Each structure stands twice: as structure tokens, then as C-alpha cells.
Length: 260
View 1: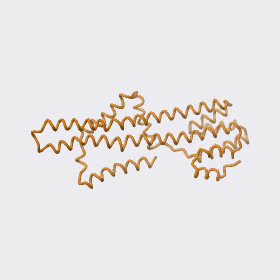
View 2: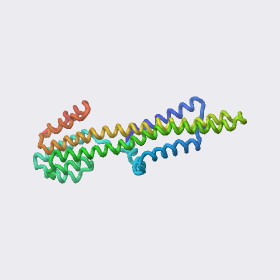
View 3: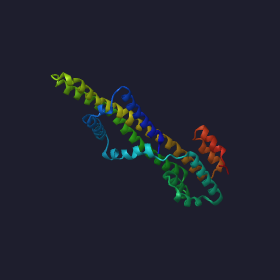
């Protein structure tokens, strides 16, 4: 579970509600079913127009990554690949076939199986990089859809406000209700701006951030797998992979017992 995403959403929406209460307002004043239907339903509908239905259906699974996506620990990956390197040097690369069957990470599993099968280095790199690019594209699609929704929502809110003001102008003979009608009209704009800036756009940024992190880890993984195939010394494998990590983590990896 990604605590940053959950805490961020809770903090943002709590700040909004708290601000309303401190100004003397109440939540009931923000309830407007017609504005909600227009902004939420209209935003989803507008997004559907621009993308295939399959991608829209898959958006739920992509958003799930922002909340519950498993985050790979680079230190554990380095440790695992260095151990594979030791085994391969002691007993031969074929010993890794059994290890490959136990792996859950599909990129590492595919890479180890490819080098066990004796696949040429350039082919291994090409296959694994294609896998990484496909993953990037899936995350990019999800982020793009959310960014589009973040653009549509405020506009639909403005449309809702204009509709509400038109309705208000049709009832100028009831001046005592004008204040209430104007307030209700602007609820749609509030819904659109809030959902865009406190939901759709932040989730899009989170997906892009998670994608960048995963790509970095997978690129490190590919270098490690190819280093095993090349028969490199475990310390060289460790150093190659540590180069992909931030300085502090790099020091932890190099300082650990990961050598030959």
C-alpha cells in the first residue's frame, strides 16, 4: 500500500472541508446531485470519447498501482542477482533454471530463463527492454487518461455553472431565491476544480512517478542479468547495479556483504 498517496488524498480533502467549516459553511451546502452527475458523468463520458473502451476499463487496474502497486526494493534485487552470480560461477549457469521457476517478477524471470537457454546478449537485452517499454506505455496511457479527465472536469464545472446562471436568470421575478440559485450554480465549478486538482491530476503524477521508479529498477535488473551471462565477478555485478541507485542506497549496497 502506498501511504503517500492515501495520506495525500486524505490531507487534501480534509484541508478543503476544514477550510469550509472555518469559514462558517457546512457540508450540506456543497451537496448538489445535478452538478455531481454533470461533472463526474460528463468527465468520464468525455474521456471515453477520446480513448478505446478497453483502455478506459483498464484504467481501474492502472489506478490501483498508485495505491497498492508493489514497490521493488533495489537492494533486495541486487542481493538476489549477486547470489545468482555466485551460483552460476560455482555450478554453471544452468543451475539458475530452477531459481527462475521460483521468481515472481516477470522481467527477472524472463531474463534469467533467457540466459539459461543460451540466448545471445543482444536478443536478451532487446526482449527485456521491449517488456519495460510495454509496461511504460501502459502506465503512460493511464496517466494520459487521468490528465485528460483533469482538463475536462473544470470545463464541465464551468458549463454547469453557466447552466445554473441561465436558470437563475429565468427566475428574476423571484429575487429572494437569487442568492441560493447563484450559490448552487457555482457548486458545479467547485466540483470540477476539486476533482481535477485533488484527484485526477495528482493520481496521474503518481502513476508517472511510479513508472519512472519501476523503469529504473528494471533497467538495473537487465544490467545485472546480462552481467551474469557475461560471467562477471559478483563484486563487478554489484557495482554495475549499484550505479543505478541513489548515493545513499548505493553506499548501503556496496558496504553490504555482496562480494565474491
